[in-house]
Length: 147
Image 1 (spheres, rainbow, N blue to C red):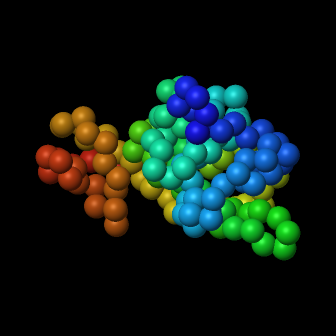
Image 2 (spheres, rainbow, N blue to C red):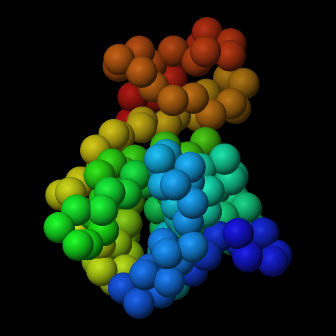
């Protein structure tokens, strides 16, 4: 993490190479917190970092978690999600995430490998992650909007 609370800005393969070389084996064993800022640039931080902190408190185009693997002398994305309860990004944010991963020189899948569906409850205003198409608020029991 850089001073000021933001994740490390990764706008090129060279920047990613410098950043990944400083990661410990323990850090590499689990996914990282990731956001794509309004400038389209990827930011990465250790997994236990909050997405809002990774973004330095700014708005984002996409957010989630990303797993990385070293294969055939290059780094690739092994898993990537939009799971961020700080930002609740829609699955349509994939295009922004894909562009930022391409800019960082990372091989990537064709979409999120794990998609989270978020809905705000009209009754209690809490954010929910919809699981198994069960559109019911876990906080108050009200129905969640399906769209």
